[in-house]
Length: 91
Length: 194
Ligand SMILES: [Zn+2]
Image (cartoon, rainbow over all chains, first blue to last red; front, side, top):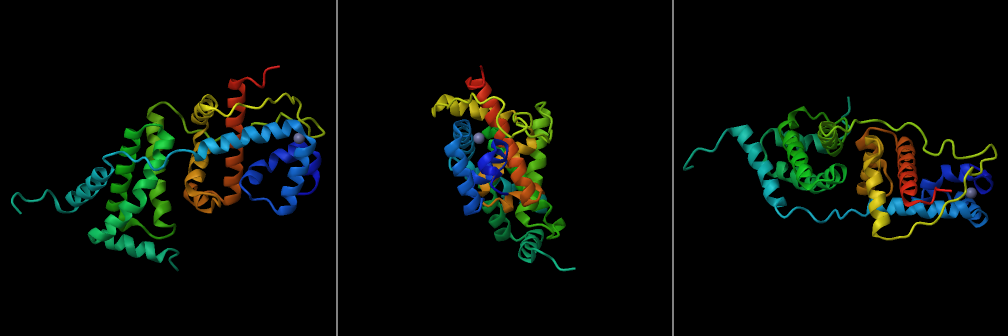
């Protein structure tokens, strides 16, 4: 990487994901910002890219199904059954 | 030969020997995460629950076959990915690998955009919905990368391991996936029209 990032949209584009994810060196990130100052289309492009990025991370990983514990217990029960057969009645 | 993931091998041995606590530990630690990933991939809670349940059971039943070459978690996610692929295939969605950069023809010889008429998107629910719809049209591999990366967080090393690619490779898959989603969404939201 060199200061083609500052001068060329295609080089800017290639490092865009790395820029958004904070994977670039400080120097490279500086070149990206310089490019953005000079290039309105890439600035719009970056904002669109950011929205895509955020939309992906935004899935509520917390709202598990209400019967989640039951499902987990179901896995344990099926496993026991597989190992030991059906439990004997009355045991 | 040295076993890379000795702790995981020990855990798997205990499960294979019928240790309930070990089994529960694996089910608890992986279930939530697997459900989240499956739901993102399948866009359906019921199907995600099925895939997760089948995967966890397969892990418990197959624990004696685990050899520790990859972490237990990566092994389990491999099983889950197969189940998801099967489900998507039954729905008629083929697993295609997106090999081509979506913007490969977008630049002129000097590296500038050929068409510079990008217009900002509104940041509202409609835009988000369009973006999510576009995500569903991605080749499976790219979609997995995007979803897993979101689950795994920033560094992506573990996401790469789960997908069986190098971190560098993952970054490329990720970039092309985002780029394809952006392009798809922009076409629908209208700023590409002259
Ligand atoms: Zn530019």
